[in-house]
Image 1 (cartoon, one colour):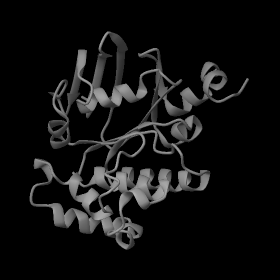
Image 2: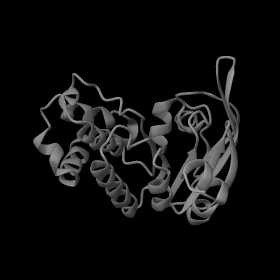
Image 3: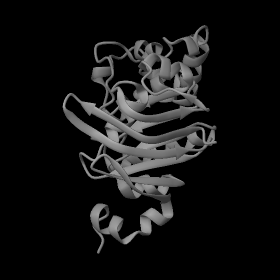
Length: 237
């Protein structure tokens, strides 16, 4: 049994059905990339896993237990954390305060101080910025704060939604290096990323979404070499 198993997941925004049957699996300690065109349902898939959007059908099993339809705090307590698209930091709060929000779940009860020390040791730049308001940081700095905030809950699976959005190529490479490091420490990663080439280079397995459905799956290398993927997402003929 995989660590995380998603089967025939459906979700809607009011009358608009966004997901029509998304299926994928994540093994312990691996990186899985979900790719597809804008509007394919990638971000909605992550939101449905987190309980931000309530699934209307399908199953989500995490460590063999159903988590479909749980509230976000319950999903975090189970061991899944999200780095959202656009970071969604509390801009008027300090870096330190933003990180402490990440520990405000039962899973991290009593571990807040230890976890925040760990984040400052893992990301030394944040220690120098701890009293700075999050809104005053650069995009790259904000992305690292969002990443550290998600790690405060000590997740088993980290969901990352468009982590390179708005970042320079140099900073993007630094963020992806951090993803590799986090994964090397045993955290499984589900990556939704506009930079399809980098996403497939990072991942061991990949899934392609089209119009809210999983239409292709396989090793990241096989997906990268698929002629349809090359044409539609990589600009190759």
